[in-house]
Length: 187
Image (tube, rainbow, N blue to C red; front, side, top):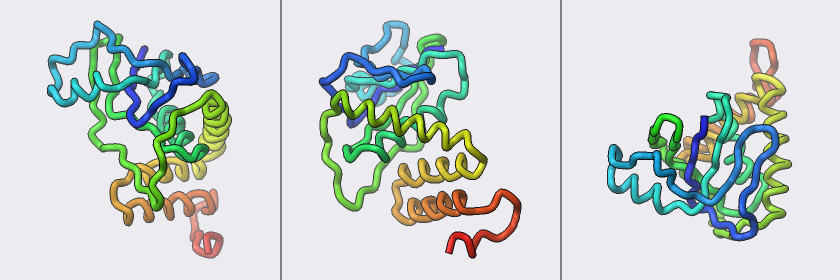
């Protein structure tokens, strides 16, 4: 299965492509595959898809690739001080399917981050962080839930929602494995 996810808010001129180890995801310059039919979607969506210069490419047999993509996008946010990229569409070249992500990926910043072109060293840093997040995701249900809530907090368009989800992330990290109150531990 080959899934192409155009990247937005992403500029890079230091590399031709970059493959993240062991997950089947790479960053490559975006060219719209001739097998993708955009006539079934709105003109605005087709325009947005064509406007992308770079894309995340998933090439593998695992149908649950979306959590890996989420962890990778979080790695851009956590491990660098750039404005992180986001995706709005998933294009499947195997079955000519265009999927629009209906929940917009927005970012709230207390201090506006600059849009800086990514360099080769940035990808090494992202790769290292991405591997750490994958290990954390596999460690326990608590850490997996904490990452899920953090991802949702990063992409919430309302500050109050983001705050509550960050608190849920902290609660997930510090709660016990057995049922019971976690207030004392979190406090």
